[in-house]
Image 1 (cartoon, rainbow, N blue to C red):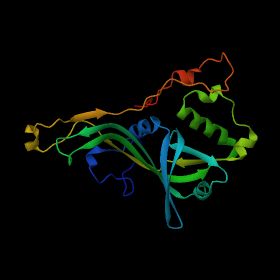
Image 2: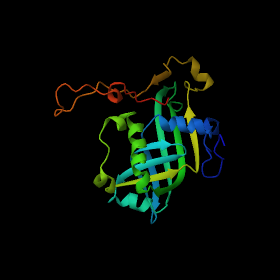
Image 3: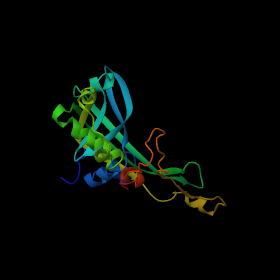
Image 4: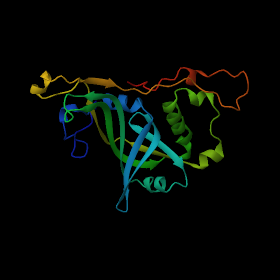
Length: 219
């Protein structure tokens, strides 16, 4: 299916005209970032954790230390909600009430399950290359001890929805004659010039993954 089925869980109820259930739209927003917020409940207590992730088809990988209490709870198959948001601009209206932001966001629902040792290295490659494309091929891969000390979870995207706002302010009709500036202040995250580690051996060039890095690769 090219779209996620609309259910009570993923349906956008506030301003539904901004919603999209199209898989490619969801994928594009996910692929343009590498930090998400994962929400889940343990014994009635809600938690939300920011973490790096990587997408592989309809599956999202996250990772952390094996001693992580939260990951230990999540790998038991808890239902989770994962969100990603991009801020694209501040919408400056003639009234403070109608001021807003332009954004692209995704909400994903699924269950977190542990990734076996046979797939752990692959999942970490997906996460690494989502953060900085091509870095896995340039750097030393994790050795066995490091892999044993890492928990990797896979979240199958059971349902999802995207919500997007674009365009300028939507002021009240009578406010358009006011002598008050209105418009959009664009926002974007950009990568600066790579800075070499102080212990780097002299003469080593900047690798392609760092030299050609672009944050908004999926936009």
